[in-house]
Length: 239
Ligand code: ADP
Ligand code: MG
Image 1 (tube, helix red, strand yellow):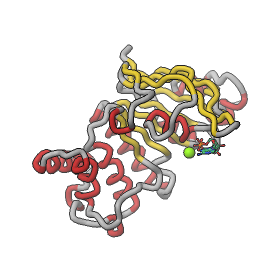
Image 2 (spheres, protein in one colour):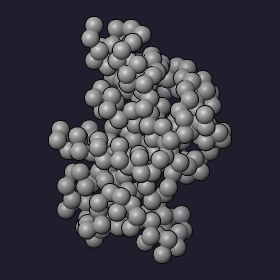
Image 3 (cartoon, helix red, strand yellow):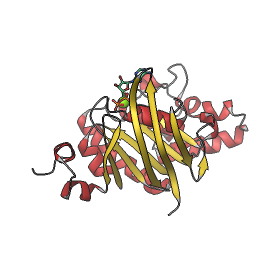
Image 4 (cartoon, helix red, strand yellow):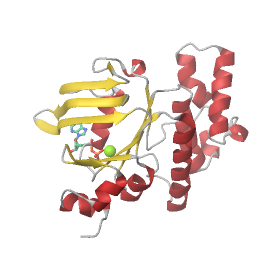
């Protein structure tokens, strides 16, 4: 198995509070992995450590077999999509997606090509000249994903990207994310507190509780054979 993301004894404390205790997991390259668990269990902290936005307090993070624990975020080959989109309101859709490429000094024709490709994948081609205020919620979320796609990361990190959308749009975006994963074949780690999202999107689920991985497995394994009541209750299997 080629490993996409590997965490070895990763810990995190803020001051004297241990938030991530001792997490060791291996996510195969090209996997769609979901971290699921109640609010405050450490999902975002874990994701931010993988992205390099937060230092670890111990342990080791590998991406595609390379130790990135001390690497800057930009050098890790990851791109993160946030729940609140984090779009630049004064920039067009094109410029929002081109932003990080320009920052990295990419050539004009390369930028145009990569943005066009991301727009095609996300069905944003007709909206490239618009500003975020003139887009629907779903389109804004697609722009946020497009900003990640143009960087051609090896690993996509999603932190509850659909939680601000209404129920109907969430279902539609779930299908789009599944299609995106099939089309790009990249490793994806998706954080959510929503069991349905976890069950429908994941190849592998990691159930987090109070800074520990309580159980890991396929959706079917967790549903059929939860280790304990917490996992069973959370995943929604019959008692
Ligand atoms: P989740 O994303 O699962 O809701 P988080 O990773 O955001 O959980 O937070 C896990 C725990 O760490 C929470 O108790 C939260 O209050 C705490 N925490 C997160 N970030 C910080 C921080 N920068 N300083 C202090 N405590 C933090
Ligand atoms: Mg969170």
